[in-house]
Image 1 (tube, helix red, strand yellow):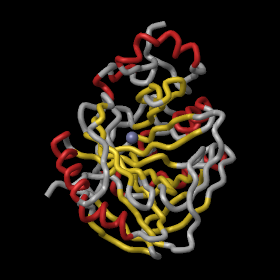
Image 2 (image 1 turned 120 degrees about the vertical axis):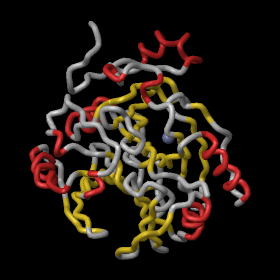
Image 3 (image 1 turned 180 degrees about the vertical axis):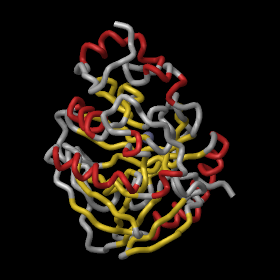
Image 4 (image 1 turned 30 degrees about the vertical axis):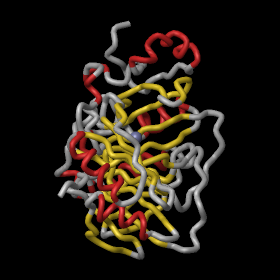
Length: 319
Ligand code: ZN
């Protein structure tokens, strides 16, 4: 049976792009692996942060909308995004976040200690101390002040709250092949084929408020497939189930299919290949604006509209 492997990436909505860059690349020490534009609105950025090599499952991406309105967390979306850190890194991260006036609180869920906080535009995040960091594909990024042994290893989980969780459970479990592996305080944790590469956690709460998209909310979560064949196999299953997936869309760094489940959550299926080095070398990933071919003719115009971004680390680019 074709099953998704785990999380491929999460895409969320931010405010000012420089603030977003300073937080994810500066404070959290991720690498900006791709600087592109929103293909549906090329006058705004699409920024991708990951480990040094941009492994699937390490990647969080943002549409920065500086003039957008604040969203509201609730049902029908991913409400919280968790990153994996090695257990010995927890104290250092608590200190680092507090030194930067980021308010944190701490809980233990699924026997894992987690440090919860928000990004500058309100997105709910957590760093989770987990041994899965020993097993997952990860390449440290040497241009961050975060020592290698403390670096974020990628996405650990996404949490989804629904008034009626049955439709999303059915899609995730019966169609995409994620298996329930644990429960804790009303939450059920699901794992794909590769349990180290990011979990899905779902809770049903019939009184939960409905979400509203906007700054500080997740736009969609992408689940990882090995290749286009796996994606189209799952696409047929989704169709047979009565939902309405998109055709395959070529995002250059991966191929994507989207489907919105009845409760409102937008899922994407994204292929592992070809990855972020398909259109620029590993050494200079993210340092210059990358455009899809059909927008190359408008490059000058687009570059004039987009605000300049200052990377919080030195670049390899020739001046
Ligand atoms: Zn996506």
